[in-house]
Amino acid sequence: MAPLGNLKDLGSLQWKPGVRLSERFSLVYLGVLVGILAGLGNAAFRTCMEFYRYLFFSKYAGYLGVSSGGWKRALIFLLPVTGALVVGLAVWRFADSIKGYGMPRLLLSVARKGGYIKARVIPLNITIPTLVIGSGGSAGREGPIAALGGALGSVVGQVLHATPQRMRVLVASGAGAAIAAAFDAPIAGMMFALEIVLLGNFDIEHFPPVVISAGTATVVTEAIYGREVTFRLPPFQLKNLWIEIPSYVVLGLVVSILAVLFIRLFHGISEYFEDRVHLHIYLKVLFGAALVGAMGIFLPQVMGNGYNYVEQVLQGQLPWVLVTILVFAKMVATSFTIGSGSPGGLFSPALYIGCMIGASFGGVVHLLFPTLSAHPGAYASVGMGAFLGAACHAPLTGIFLLFEMTRNYQIMLPAIFATMTGSLVAERLLPYSLDTYGLARKGIFLHHGREREVLETLKVKDALTKDFDAVWEGTSLRGLRVYFGRFSRHTDLFVVDNEGRLVGVIPFSILREALFREDLDDLLVARDLAITDVEPLKEDDSLLEAMKRFGHRGVDHLPVVDREGSRILTGMVTRRGVIEAYNREQVRRSVGEE
Image 1 (cartoon, rainbow, N blue to C red):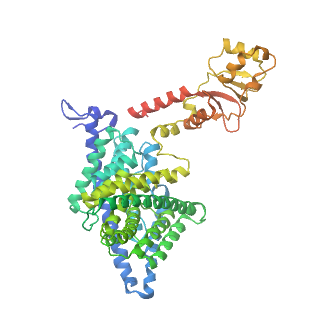
Image 2 (image 1 turned 30 degrees about the horizontal axis):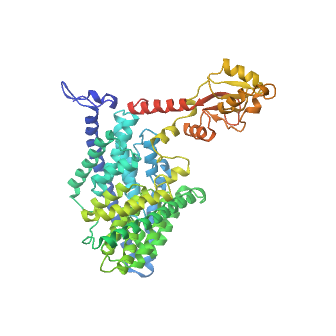
């Protein structure tokens, strides 16, 4: 077999003389490779997390005598703090790779950096987030696992000198495969890759590597651990469609409101730690761990990923009041852990919170309609998928993940109603998800579609032209008529002073009316007709900004100056020029040109 040298040459890949592989088949081949690596990476992550959990909650907690009760129960505070002593050092040294919530970094690398991820992310995401979770930090495994899988896909692409377009697909394939391996859920992993990592881009060319990598990772996981069900549900069935389906719709509404609350709370606390807590990053991580440890003294259920408590709630083994309290306590604890800088994911906390919301809501419904509604555990299970879908703006991922975690087909109908309602209302209330809210606060918008992302990436200089019409501000209307008739190549005229500084723009709509007023030939000059409050563009402004100003001003040409604060006219951009630059970039991306 010929070596894999460059993905641009995948069309010439040969298995034996005279037999060539198509590029799509070659990407499937790479999808298998990425899926195997992601499955093995998940096994390494899981082994590491279980080791830390045993070390802290069996050995260390036993040594401290936490389980004996009394004053020693307060020593549970030391578990996350001890873990943070090591985690803080890693975050301090490798903040750009593992600090805080990692999904925005993964999305940014796919959308803006051509899928390039540093190889060091791989060992860091196996060892450090597992220490956070294993020592009692309130965080999830899925974000780090997705980053791990994405990094594996990126490294494969880097070794093969993949084009940016192919790198993005490999990164998405790796992230989706890692999620599939983590939950033993290939369909949910595929949806995660398409709906979240690729920002809802369901292009048919993405399906083969994404699907095969998710399936391969699941096969690897089942070969190692056997086929597993993440959560065991009580017997589930719809007792009364007229009562329960509207109840699940209401559950979706409740979930949407609390999902928005969680998004704002998490990012608010993260920004508070970033901007208002004036401590070294190492001390911030310790401070966050100490806050979670203090909460753990009274509510140990908020520590770790909490899957054992989710299982208890699904079986109806926790009291309603405690379940309701844990909805908000878990939000706060997770925000403290990850917001302070400790690496971790938000999938597990989202599933946990959704479970508690569903159980609390289901308890109320069951109290009102004891013989006509399902067990509260049924609402708890639906709440998991609904809250995940609402918080991440990924309803398909939430629906299929819930189905594959429970292996219960009966749950699909209520899951669809609750999850779609929750996602649609949450997106209406807040257009940004857990993954994109922080980026949006920094002016980085990823979920507004590929067209907007391309326009944000391109700069004014990419569409700049020096072919523009400029007239002196003192030119009379008679002179404008002569200039427009003999020399003008464009419909809008720029007006400049003696030094070439921009005074304003005369749109064609104004110029057209004035040209027929010969009685004003010697009364009006160019400055009188110009719109003078036009703010010029700079060469490093984005084309998205240019398009916004086109719409606001109603002109077809916008002036460009050389730098901030300058009014020296150096060129212009046109609507047509922006469209041409956009089309060139789309072609470049599609063929993978650098």
